[in-house]
Image 1: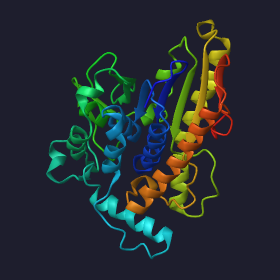
Image 2: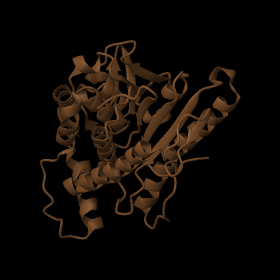
Image 3: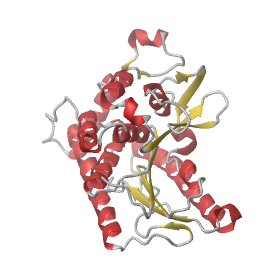
Image 4: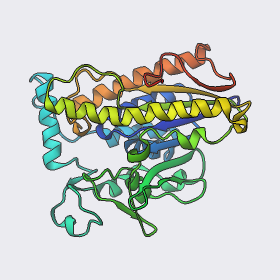
Length: 336
């Protein structure tokens, strides 16, 4: 991959647990298209994907992501109706966890800093084997994991620009209560950044850039959907709306800021928001469905959407460079 001297490319990755396989597909498309972000910002699953992407040589990053998302299980019930299969897989994760990420508490409940349903300590070892932290911290690309201080509620950006990032910072970004316990960093307890900013655009958009910026924002939870027909689907829809509304408000706020604040005069940002919209087959509890078939479908969806973005950029149909903050047409379902 090569950087673009004429553009500042920033990749922003949202949270969404198992839905994060979509982002891995987008990352593969960017790699194959030769697009190298200067800065990668992530929350929760997005922080995990971003750390693996930034913390490995470009030629092995996609393979490391594939290994992370690969499941040791097998879909022995593939012949069953799709909704049944996904529901069973989700239920299995809720009961037994996901190897390499989290599992039943057991005796770990006595060591957890806060009450939780699962033990997330297995993620630490997985990150250590998936991320070259020396490379992650060398500053190219810059990496930021967003979290929230449990006690103050303050949004915190763990950034390789001002500190050394370790597995604990990424775990803190993905510690969604009450499923997972808070993670202690430097004497403070932190939880999932998605509670404040599931699509963490603020670090990128608050930094005026002399060069035109292309901000590729990969979101996982849709604003629009069909009408829920079950109690579980209604609960899932409520979660989608909670997080998608964050994104819409954030984008609207920054559009006003770029239009009115003299500090951003002359700045150019093109926001290309890729959204995992192909969710017609997902079920309630979708974020806990790590089955091979579901992961593969999400990855392939992200690969298609990412490749489409790369083609638009290479052919010039994705316009960049105009003053202000602009949403790329066809890539922002959450536009105000």
